Image (tube, rainbow, N blue to C red):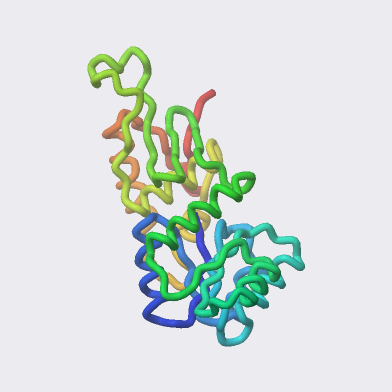
Amino acid sequence: MRILLVEDEPDLGAAILRVLNREKYIVDWVQDGTEAWDYLENQWTQYRIAIFDWMLPGLSGLELCKRLRNRNSPLPVLMLTAKDRMEDKVAGLDAGADDYLVKPFGMPELLARMRALQRRAQPLQPQQLQVGNLVLDYNTSTVSVQIPEGDRVELGRVSHQVIALTAKEFQLLEQFMQHPNQILSREQIMNHLWEIHAEPASNVVAAQMRLLRRKLAEYGCEGLVETVYGLGYRLNVHS
């Protein structure tokens, strides 16, 4: 899941970035409101949540909200601010913010409010994604493989097993599950998995694919993702 974080306080922005990365979010962090609008103008449909500080260089978080809503964007927005007066909260909500978090705040509360925004935006973001015998759960940031009825006895009658994935492996499998039976190019995968300013190594996609395939094979999902030579990779799901 991709998040746009617009926060000009370096220490706070870096702290939020670390927490969100740990929770398997892909985060584009910018520190200027005008630059943030450039991102939103070109690709707001790629973001699932935006986090705006109120006071920013260039455009303020309030102005970013207004511009989004004037374009009928449904993107959920969490506003961060030191302004705690009732009239300020009303102004932020009236401008189009979906929630409001007053500084200083704890990271657990930030994550809880983000989960609440995801639930409210359910038409945009389902809570689970199932493709074949794989189930991705957005609430727990896990992917599990369902165990066929006949195989459950030897596995202690469990109905599913959670696949131990790193953040990047989770994000990569999520992308394939969102596009089953479709070829994804190396460029598409790069754009989805890495932040805009990141400069990963040229072989990073192939390396991630090897790691993901190894994990899937450990859970009985050998050959699920194939290489389409010269074009990219594909998650094969048979109905």
